[in-house]
Image (cartoon, rainbow, N blue to C red; front, side, top):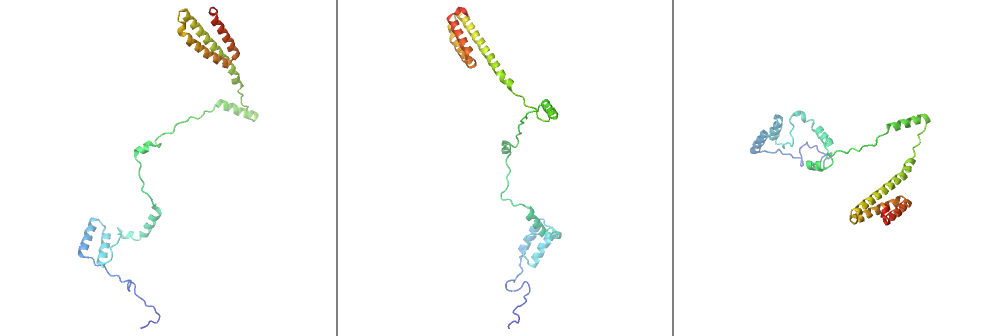
Amino acid sequence: MPLKDGNVNVPTGTGFWNNAKPVQYSKETQDLLRVMMQESKLTNFQQRQIRERLQCGDTLPTQCHPSSSNMGQKKNIVKIQRTNVPIQCSRPSLRPAEKCRAGDAYSREKFHPHPTRDLNKEKSRLQNIMATGSEPPEPKHAAAQRDDPVEERDRFDELVAEIQERWAFLAEMEALGRGKQYSNMINTEISQKLREMERIDKKRSSELRDALQYSTANPDSI
């Protein structure tokens, strides 16, 4: 018989594709589930949920809430876990204590002293600025340059004294008949000191060299 509108109201849960049949659990399965519930120490509310599913032939739940108050919070809990729990690509591993000690984590930073400020110099500088309104002029280092020739003259005189000491020592050794034993060493040292004197003052060193040659030719004049 043809339908007038072409649509038929089918009750929910029936029809060709939605023909759900209750699951028949055997007595052995039910006994096994009871033993497992006792060993798992489930709450009374959780055990009652599973027993109702067994009696009705429904599929067993994948998650049982410990109380009825937690059932309404399921969606909120899942949402919080998705937002707060970060996704970790790899499992973190702890470094052993030897590797931690081998690095620079336990080493203290070395203290590097900074140059200290001269308080007296800063005080005089501020006084000059307040009095004149400008920075004080920097001192010139001309005095240090004047001291260099004095040091060179002092070194020249030291070399002259050292040469005279060696000549006196060699004369004493020759008087004792041991001049040949020390002559080469003394002459080498004198030559080195003469070369150093030439670098300081060529004119004076040449005069001293002539005097030494004359004293060598005339030993009685020493």
